[in-house]
Structure formats: C-alpha cells, structure tokens
Image (tube, rainbow, N blue to C red; front, side, top):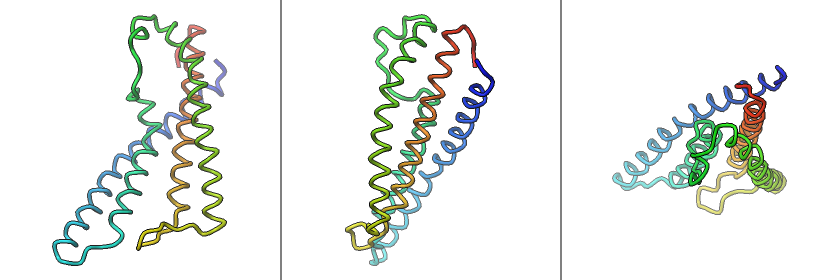
Length: 168
C-alpha cells in the first residue's frame, strides 16, 4: 500500500482513539449534571437546564465515541457465516459492504450539515424553558459523523491491504 494511505489510516485511528477516550469522560459530565439536578430538587430549587444538558452530554458521548467504537470492533455484526470465513474472505466482504455504511453516514452528514446551517441562519433554540442554542450540539453530531466516515475509509484501506496480502 502507498505510504500516504498507511499514514492516513494511522492518523485517523489515532484521532479517533483520542476523541473516543475523551468522549468516555462525558459520562462523568452526565453524572455531574444529573447529580446537580438531584441536589437541586432536594433543596426545592430544581434547575431548569439539567435535563437538556444531560441529553446534550449523552449525545456528545454517543456520537463522539462512535468512531472509537467502530475502531474497537464493538459494533454489532451478524456472525452467522462471517466468523467461519478466512480473514481474506472477510476483508473482501467488508471492502464491499463498507460502501453501504459510508453511504448511510454520508446521508446523515448531509442532513446534519443542512440542519446546522439552518440553526445558524435562524438562531434556532430549543423549545424548553432553558432555550439553549441548538447549533453547538448539531456541530458535535456532524463532527462525530465525519469521524465515523473517516474510520470507515480507514477500514476500506485496511481491507484492501489485507486482500493484497499486506497488513497495516
């Protein structure tokens, strides 16, 4: 494989590893927000922002950790026949099916970008009492989808290398 593709795979996987490890700590943010909500309710002053902030933290955790989850192979896979195949056969099937994943993520990214642009144009805010701007969380979603697309491309390059008898 050309060196530039090997560097691309290593760079994408290093970035996704770092972002995924960071995203794991979003659970602590989520726990802190929920704890604050519990304390506030116990004191008779329930904060208006905690439910929505908890949702935003969960979205950040889920979306930013998506590419890391793919990288670790934590995604669900139908293993009825796949597990019995040779690594080369698995790579051939993966090299074909990864295009479905890239297409799906591309459609999500397209919709996400359009929705983010709309949020900026109209100053979209949540309909809750807190009324936070929606653009920041939509940007996070788009970044997470981009990272998953890049990880999918890294998978494709790895599979093509495996088909050529090389290992990245």
